[in-house]
Image 1 (cartoon, helix red, strand yellow):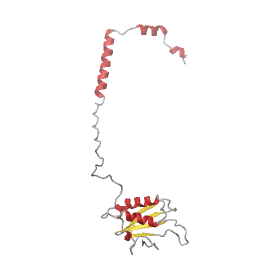
Image 2 (tube, helix red, strand yellow; image 1 turned 30 degrees about the vertical axis):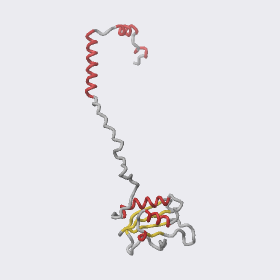
Image 3 (cartoon, helix red, strand yellow; image 1 turned 135 degrees about the vertical axis):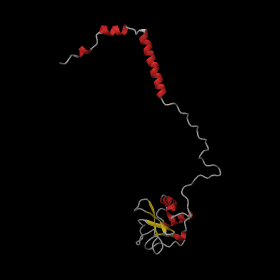
Image 4 (cartoon, helix red, strand yellow; image 1 turned 90 degrees about the vertical axis):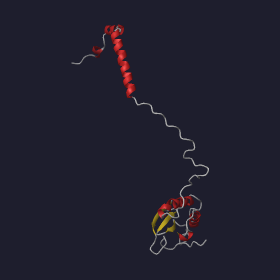
Length: 182
């Protein structure tokens, strides 16, 4: 049997009597004691505040006048080809972002300026056999038994670099390459 919602409404006389009723002194004391105990428990269980770490000195980690700020990858003459790939890639990306991005000589000159050995380099032609701009340029630096390889051009849309073993007969690039005679 369902009851009408009005059956759940409190009797107005009971509400008025509850509002007029004051807790006895003993009830008030118990309520105050319970409140104090709850506050004490909450305070005891709360994590204690930790002191904030001292601020770092303004010079901590900052380069000093005698310590130059790192400029990016650097040539590692005693390192492997893989160790020097970050510099090779950075140089190639710089040329790719320049107006000379379609010129093989620009990649070779930039790699020489970065410290790579010009005598160990190879580069493909800037133009195709019929005189059109090359769809991609390949350039390489032989580093011991390995090669730093780079490719850039409209076909790739970006610079691609990698490390691979040198060819059995020496060198890094297959086929005809451009003489580096400048």
